[in-house]
Length: 511
Ligand code: CA
Image (cartoon, rainbow, N blue to C red; front, side, top):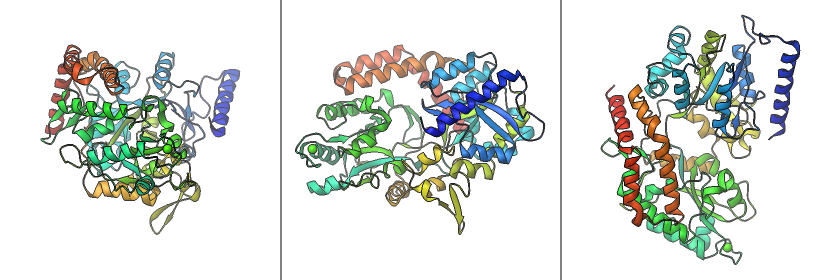
């Protein structure tokens, strides 16, 4: 925990205590005009917790007269648990932030109020947002037809198929071994093999980790075999289940071999978020597939041994196709709603509306003018502190409260402005070549469809993840168990699940 956050936690503790000691029912500052204080539950991704000290939200308070106070504590590391615990409280926080699926569920159950009328009467920016970005409206609409939360975006709403991640490789290692950039999946395999066997870090040991990931999954590599991890839109525009396609079997068969041969990090399942720091700082990591901006920031950080980690085009897959399946969906999947115990729904929806105004969009995307950036000739110029921040510009800004996954639009220009030359060239190469496949759009379900999802989805996901792990780590052979895998999926209701997804998708494209 950073010092700033510790102080914030202490502060929160004190203000709660003051409340108890004075025994006041109404929160301080809950007067009619301005200065309204609202409580917010925000705890997601297992580590992102609302921080009362975030300068971006303090600026928003200045502009709106609404100050948010976080109720979640960082001592709980499981966001799902924090969410359940919060729901069990007698009085709910004024604002509840979390993933859209959960918010719609608790909305229908009565923990959140429907926002339809409030938006209609008090939120012109939200109305405009829903008109210009139908994906957001569809995602926000629950199976009972009501809107319970405001979702946010990862990019400008007119941008479809923007890159998010790409392949990165050690140019300094390629140079040292006299290899050129791999252009096909076979060449990529050969390069990873050379990284493993030819000691590019020059310490006389076979300690290189040719391919590594920080997410605990190597699903990024399935695309090299024409396979897909879950549902995707195929080349005929059809909603398709990648889990049951023979291409997945081919991918897993090959990747299990790569893993066995030491080409994939032996610890990729458990290494976690710090994988890049660990393996790049120690001159051990060779290649990954990750976000451009943050991944390109390590060259200037670990300079002692000539680290040159650069983006490269996706290697052509086994069918000769060059493409990138991991694009940026318009929505990030999270957002916020108004709880049944909120005494100020009108002020709250106006506060939500602020975040979708032009001013709110800028604040959410690039932070506070004069603090995080200055305008020069109509361009955003980040301050040196932001540009040199740990983990790249977006990470730094997140610690300031910008780019947090609330119901706001995050412009891509901001991310581009914060990219170093290496990141920008990779991002533009992926964008300009049109390599990025369209993402699966958000879907809305009827009540009966939602029942099918609730009954089956979790079991199917759990089974699928466990099975993939057994195959990749070599505990089971994919050729021997593929048929029984398909049977189990069927018995868990996968056909039903696919059917309701397909039907909802058909409706959404005919709307
Ligand atoms: Ca070595």
